[in-house]
Amino acid sequence: MTQGKKFWLYNGPGVGLYNEGVIVFPMYTFERTDKDHKTSVLVYSKDHGKTWLLSNEVGDYNVEPQIASLTRGRIMANMRRQHGQEYRQVAITSDLGKTWSELLMIQP
Image 1 (cartoon, rainbow, N blue to C red):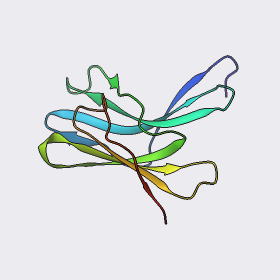
Image 2: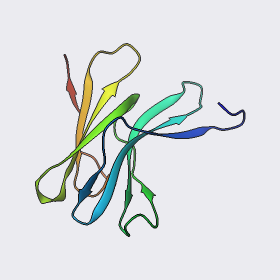
Image 3: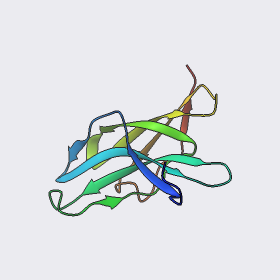
């Protein structure tokens, strides 16, 4: 890690998708704070990759998001929860991550 950096963006292990004319990739952020916060986001382009936007965070302390297209342009994100808590977080967005549904916690 480079000293002085406080924010990183990592690609998720999954693949992107093309959702109603928009290129979307799952990623997660790392922000150096007192608790080193990690959370999942979407990175998307509405102009065939010329410019990219970052969604709002979904969940908390999760990484390795996978995404899937649902009907009516919705996207489901499925993320691995960290810090020894053995469950996954799942949420749905219909506006490219501006807002997210309530999180569903899935135990193994």
